[in-house]
Length: 270
Image (cartoon, rainbow, N blue to C red; front, side, top):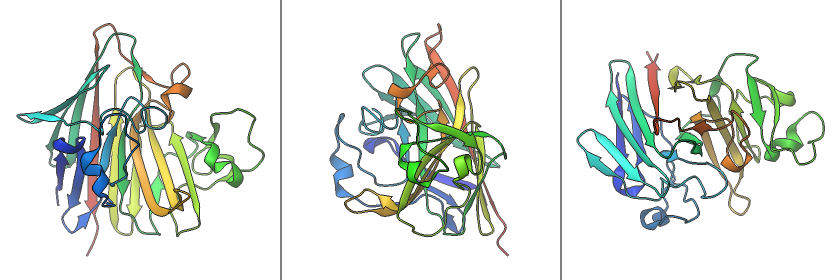
């Protein structure tokens, strides 16, 4: 079955559905506060797939695009932010869904972008990526790692699927933990029973990666819930403020950055 998608330009351009025949891939968490957000507000997690740019963590919280109204012109949707304009054209293909993006900004402008896809996954779901790929894990994972956390480090690195001894390729049951990681590769595939969802991002001359958010009832502290994200990214850090050389996308002299997100689903159900 082909993938079918729905977006909501009026409410931050959020992808509200990604359906493969019998299965809805996107997780949802209804929150009425999502309807009335304004730029600068704290992030309201309603699930789906959010466009997070120019940062994910940090300021503004989950970026500057999710809290603004987008407009649609034919097949293209776009949003005007203070420092940039982002446009996307999403289409169904024979194999899945492709989304082509263009960001316009001053040359030298640095940013992180994530297709912040929160997926509705079972406890047996797995994330497949190339074994041995360099993977960054972030401070919330420090109690789960082999060895102490280095003082002042924004992240530590190890090899997929178990950087610093923390097995990350299995989602598993609720265990009260929440960890973020970034795999230095632009491709990954979710396996959940007989279903598959492959995610990929391509961007010439820009750093690409796949972020993982594995919240198994460990976040937020006051009222934790389960949410699992697999997020194609430009950049290799959640917070733009932590980005060193090569850790963020950078607008070239043309004033434009182009990239493509590809989502492909395969169902092997009888």
